[in-house]
Length: 483
Ligand code: SF4
Image 1: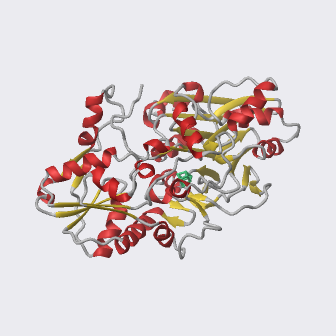
Image 2: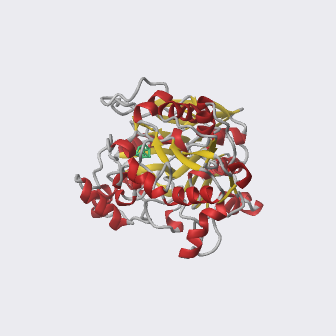
Image 3: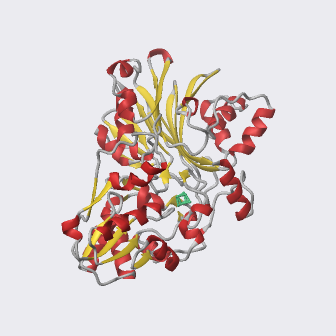
């Protein structure tokens, strides 16, 4: 079984999705795209391919995409010109092959496969109602409610059944679905999670991020819009918007950390945005220092922006070992403690005697930050200042990101001065919320209509948390009990 080696003190994107229509060996393109989306989920992957005569074939496994789909025999078993795929990082449902997506069901209209990125906030309530009606759930993932809602829908077309299902769910979803007439992509009305449309000659591709289009050589066409359903068949792409329009709430954390830096998200290159966030951070929290050092890899673009704005040299003072596998040995407490040292090493000649500004994208529990600071001090740094390219993460995410409960979020329990002490730095500063919005081209955060989901920094949950108690304290207890 795969287990993360270190405590990897980050929020984790839950999933990546991909769909291909009208391509020779569609499953091979999906496997390549899933490989590019590996950062969105490393626990398991699956592909459902549709062959001649609407025959569906599935292959799923636990582990990394290359391990699951690297075997030519596996790919030969997934023939067809359309396929959908999914990478998973579990937050809902235990680790088990039955929870690996795409989910597939045989309906009266034929086979139907669906892959979901996001998290439904009324799935438990819907599931109870569906079970009372006699639906037999095969997995413990929230996404299975889509399948049962489609099964019991009284509408006749696949599209109408899907719309009927989507109108009953609450939460965040970007999904790709496949039946023998079409490939379908859909985003929730607030557009919390990303989904893009690309084109490769006569083929169409739907993917969580543009980096998956790049790897298969597809051109970016456009983002699927919030609340939009795209239906791709041999006549091209149709679009329907069956929901009442709502103010958009794209996940702001995609810009800070989740998306790959070479992706273009909602029309904005992630790499440039991260550099702008770093520059804004430098303007807000300048400190005299000799070096700006990124915490690799995710802190690199923000550190570049910080260094350039502050006029302080950028140096790779921490080297990341890329060959530490995620699967290693059972992480005993002792190994867990060593984790960060296996992953990161201090570049002693660069750090010795220097006043160092460490730039990272977030502090979640603070465990990794503490170890990195210790390591930099042991390498001889004269001062260690930490700058974070997100505001303090004070709340849990219920929209598809794996987060600890509030009791374990360092910023939920401590102010900045206390956090600085716990981590062991000479100074600590986070980008302000307004600063983050400025880096995204806005004048600041407009509380009445922020335009992004930023609930993990503000507690402003735009989608009801129906399955969770209204009271924050009870919600934390429930989340704790479910972990
Ligand atoms: S709560 Fe945070 S991580 Fe979750 S969707 Fe909103 S911004 Fe993204």
